[in-house]
Image (tube, rainbow, N blue to C red; front, side, top):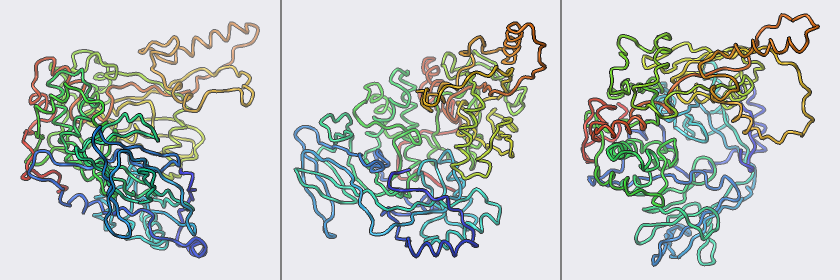
Length: 618
């Protein structure tokens, strides 16, 4: 939470509106703080994309998404040697521009004349944009205009311009709860001060909410803080603009081929075979151009982290990757003349997943389960991995796959009940779930699997009730699983003798360190081989305890639940190309065209053109 806000746990019914309206006389609602354009999900998806017939269209990338979230946020920009920056802005509604060799961007907190209520109705919360978009489409079909936001996790909001008063928002929430949509809530903040952006050039300070920066050769150096060490270099232009969360976003408008130079080496690594890097270049280009709708709510198109594709500009390019980008220049992967959903992940665990195995929405015909092997290792039609016995047999296979030798291909991880309870409570609290205050975690059970083996439903049982984790939410809520390709078993141990607790303040271990240390590979546990049964350790501990007190009668103690063991494979969602699997295919001489056909059967390579549909929600 920002230092300039505090959160109100508001979920008021119509019966409490009188209290709210009384408060509103003191804290009067104001227009939205953000000056960004609000757009609903479906119109944004259908809006014409700014594409031209050229094979090198420009895209808008949010490279600093929450500038001004911290009071100390500061950026320094400079051109390359011999060039100058041009800063364009408005003064009194009139366009103005200055040139400079160095620009510092900062924010300062500005007190508001009166407190402002800033709130929105959260219809649903999701781990991924894909599931959020499917949810937004369902809300649209039900008659509630929706927009997709990413304040932290992905969320679907009721369109703010449609529900612009506290009364309308609370009537909507009351109606949703009455209709059974009990997870919807109002996220409300009372704001007393806001960050205001400014830039400093040649000793003059200009306070502006929005301004653009460019240079003659369209190369801009960037550094954090007020510094002379500008480690980042970006092609294209820059723009500071307000966003929907009360701060600012630094947007880089960049040609797609220059953008790829900052993406491809960081997504697959420069040590990959040439053909594998070429396949990655085609996918990264296709993915970016298909996903330009992600941040319509804030008037840019794609982000620079793992929620989209990692993008580091031109400071850390690779000659090998540059060659792959040039060799595939302008090529995209299509299906029926539309850009494919070019999803890829680190490691599949030996089998790729359908789109709907991981997210909600419609299946893509070209994203079907593929055994990630050049050998006939498994027949999914005869032995679907939706069957638990089949799945456990498959996950026990260790060799003959394209991902052999990679650390994430198979894993065996354990977490304590305490750690799992902590992460589950945080997950539920962020969604204002009624079970968020549970005291005891009792059981975790995989209830349903997809034919690709991915967990579709996992039931969590607590002392005050149970709830289900659906698809990718299982990875969000539970820390140990690296993918949805896993099974879970309880860890039962004999109760340990009580030991004196340390004095208050004696521990110097941080919460995050405790969390990291408590999630371990099972093979790292002292005396526990990866394939052994944890209960065997409890038996040994019990024998040792009895030998220490031979004069006492042995008590009839029973093993207690101390944690859960997660056994699985893969890292990431597992849909589309396995980056580690593509290494093996490239080493075996597969061309990038063959690699793409292996993971996306039935697709076609085409040059970018205005005749190709970038995205359609039909």
